[in-house]
Amino acid sequence: MPIEDETNRTIMARHNEVLGSPPRIPPVDRQAAAAEVQASTKRLIGSISGRDDMPLPPVEAIPEIMFTLCRFPTIWQAVMDVTVPLQGPASQLPLRDRKLAILRTGWLCGAPYEFGEHVAQAKRMGITTEEIEAIVVGSGSPIWDDHECAILKAVEELHENAMVDDETWAKLAEKFDDAQMFELLILIGQFTATAYFQNSLRLRLEANNEGLAAR
Image: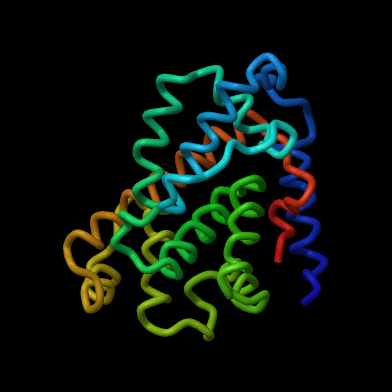
């Protein structure tokens, strides 16, 4: 589905704002940090996938972001300690629900790296191009059922007012228990924070990441 001209202009302007200058903190040399980053990437992918038999990834296949964030091992590990349970087998939220929330968060934050990366993941799990377009529109799109609409509304309300309103909370609570409700809030907050640092560091897109234009 083609992107409307006005939306495309908005995307290009945002890409220029976030990505139009070099990264503010450059990545370390790949070969110098190869062993450390290979090990941390293996742990990350293995934890999210629930596999403990992951091979070391080839250095050239590791995204540049890992060679930037390895500069800050203590705080990056703390970030991962929150992120991994939200995306891996320990999560109590359905995968589709998680992905809808992450994508709407990435779009509202104008986060090219986050949005494009998660569009690619979403497509692999069966989310369609039409649904990606509807995520861009938001909770007002007619394609969503009441539960999915409430997930997107929760993201929108947190983005706008730092709080989920009573009507949206009640709708989510029809399907989610207390643990799931809490996890959804943390998920949205975590990926908002991720958008903040990815945008502010001007992290470059990987070759297969189309940023906010991804569909």
